[in-house]
Image (cartoon, rainbow, N blue to C red; front, side):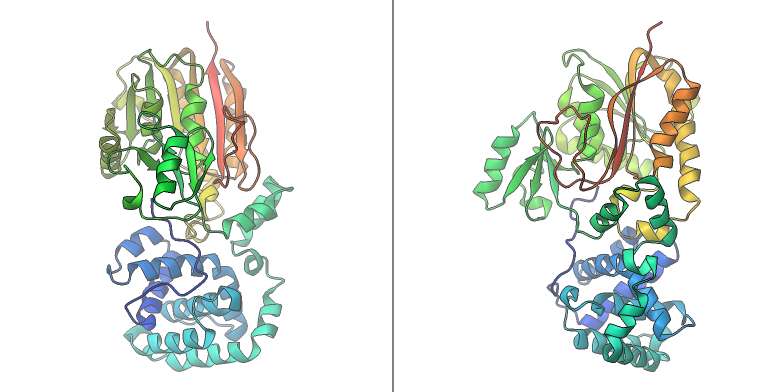
Length: 451
């Protein structure tokens, strides 16, 4: 997970570049997202001068893109060219609600028009953008009211996404969508090899950073800061990891003798956060960390090096054990399976616009195939922890129930199931200390029968 997650914009971000340039780059990021490209990659392509402001503005725009698109449809029924539409919707997303506008509305409008005039692919339509935004300023209340009945405008997620949550979580769907609009807190995992949670909390307080304990090893900061401000970060004393993600290692390893050289597989390991956590708890473990992408494997190496830990890291497809498995069974397997990432949209607001209605079913088939391929690698009496950062039941409970029906040697152990943002989780090994604000996850701990 990216350490420096920007907060939701509620005031003008500090900037040295003119606002119109920030709006141009933000609109380009919005257009790229609409075309199916990752916001993270788009932000990394922005110049260092513009990047902080563009990142903050892009997060806010994508959190309000459903409303902005509905407003643009009121102002112009026919969609303009993609670059023009992206710039117009960027401006509408930033200024449709006064209390959340990062700049005065009239400034945003003037600078959006300036942005249109100063780039070739929108220049000819600058008058159209100006007319739409001026009309919006005159008729804002009436136009917003007309969009209130639009499900996508109301919740700023695709209609199919909202409808799926209504079906999957009829009691909590509104809460899930509301949480998705909030900026995620910065949560740390304290390395127990160096500090207690209370001890590191005191170090933070000494430099003016306030945090509360969450889970067994976590601290949730009151305010996000760059990682280089965290005491001992470079030396591996602490890592950035959401509280829900911190559930994996203690849940998989609970009850095991820490002195034994347990053989553990981390099947989809990049970027290595959970791999590091496993080894922090059980340094004697023999951990094999896999990822299909060689570049992502390098991230695992970097994270382990910072933590001063060692694991065998292989670039390999976990679903094809014949290409990498040595034939020796594992005591424990962690399968953090590929998923829609529907549980982490507050950290990655582009995900809600990148996903398509069919993605969840396709990924569920991949998850089922990985479970089928890895279960034979677990020794009798061993365990497999299946998890996803998804809140869709097709990628959680439904996948596991289907697996259990076809594998009578698998026993479900106490597990939290779907962790719902804003809801207190149950079935965790550290119920005495809640997780605080956490992402959406799913966990199922499976044990293989003896004999």
